[in-house]
Structures are given as structure tokens and as C-alpha cells.
Image 1 (tube, rainbow, N blue to C red):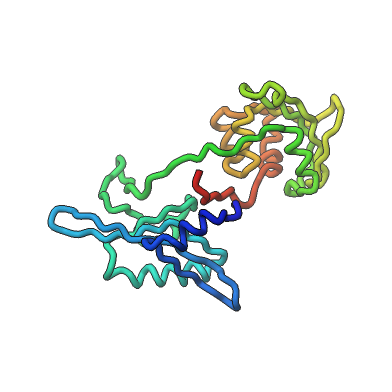
Image 2 (tube, rainbow, N blue to C red):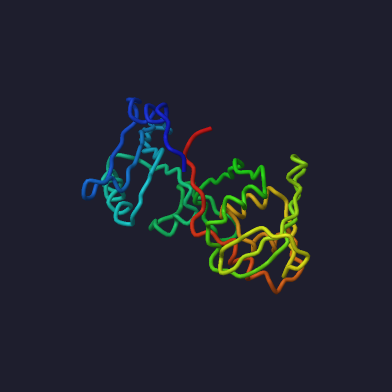
Length: 234
């Protein structure tokens, strides 16, 4: 996530249409919601939707406390529109339907509209991995050759030998390695950010692995505990 700029903070706090509530515990804000109301006419009815622009929570308790506030608005608002990057949020809701009553054959209820961000891109593959020498890649011991294809930046078409010992990596010069992988820089960028896994890319034919017996080891090596989140507007 990015630090908020002064203009972003001004947009939240100086906009008379915005409301902000927060959950505080022991003098520290554990979560907040920035929202506004959107009133619309629908036939003979006036719809009053609560639109959540930002909902940040650091603990399960903060999520529940802020949800209690939203639940208290049930007699005031028609619907709540929640903009979120939490793909599994439907597990939190008692009713995941989005109100359109649209059925996707044969028994799937429409629940949300989704979009894909295209912001992340590695512009220097070797430099990227050099920056990660202090990171532990999940305790994996493995040596692999990484072939990266980049149709935009020719200098980024690189071949690296990455040696990992108990999760600690270094670049080496060697003709000996366990497995060779070939991947486009677009998919590599998503992979190292935690957006997608090796297994998913493999099944979609977006990564080539010379020996499939190392698929599980590569899956563990590139596994990221938490996917990236960005709520800054561009």
C-alpha cells in the first residue's frame, strides 16, 4: 500500500459528502470506513444507498465492530455498495446476492462486479531478485534457471540461475540446476506479487517448467502470504 498524499486525505476529510467512522482500541485506530450516500429515484421509490469508498481493518475485531455500525443503518439505507479487493468477502456475508436476482446458469447467483488491475511490472528482473536476498522464500532449497521474456524491454530478456538454500537466495554462475522455468515478465510480475500461483500459471500454460516434479517446490518458493492491495486512485 502507498502512504496517502495530502490531496487524498483532503478528498476524504474535506469533502462534505463524505463520512468517516473509526474503531479505536487502546489509543490506536484499528480500522475505519469512509463512505457517502447516493440517493436515486427508482419508479415511485427513492433509493438511498450507502457507498463504501474505503474500508480498512487490521483485526477481525475491527471488522466486526465496523460491521455493527453498518448493520445499524438497515432502516436508513436501501443497499450498501462495498468496493473491496477482498476476493473471498462473500464468506463474511449472510446473503451474498447483489440484488439483481440474476442467475448464472445453472444455480449461481450474481454477487459482485470485478475488475483487474494492470499496474505492476518488473522493469529489472535481476535487480528485483537482488533486492530480495534478505527475504526468506518459505524455507525452500532449490536451484532453478529462470528465463524471462519481455517484449517491451529487450534488456529485460534475462536468464538467471537462482540458488535457494533454506529459503535464502543468491544469483550464481553455473550450468548445474534442478529445473528450468520460462515465463513472460507480465506473469512473473503477478507471480512474485502474490497475485497468482505457480500451479495456476502452470495449468493455464503461462509458465513452462522443464521437470514437473519440481512444481510443488516452485509453488512453495513463490508463495506469498498476502496479496497486494492498493486503494490509491490513478
